[in-house]
Length: 157
Image (tube, rainbow, N blue to C red):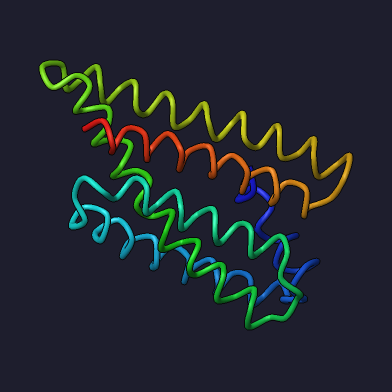
């Protein structure tokens, strides 16, 4: 919901120029790669950690005062946290269907793509009707919900 609007978030909320956004997105991707490996190493408790980290970063992006250093550091932290999402989701899907890996993987890809589309649509509606900050706040609320689901799942495991 929020990632679709990274450029406006960085430029409008934090005053980061267009050329710097490209470099920050490269850093986001590199941090995401690191987050991917960290999530794999964390094991079973990673889901709650990832959801909590995403909630914290998105909330900070929505409420902290602007400044290019703040915006840049938060974007890199966002990349690090989000890098673990694909590992966590794939692990969940495979655990749910250990005897049907192909179906679980296909379902994971479908759900991931659908969530990107629905998130972009909902975020776009919020940005158009309210502000970029509203999309960030809504994304943070949804990550709180994800953290609660992750916590419940981890407690029942």
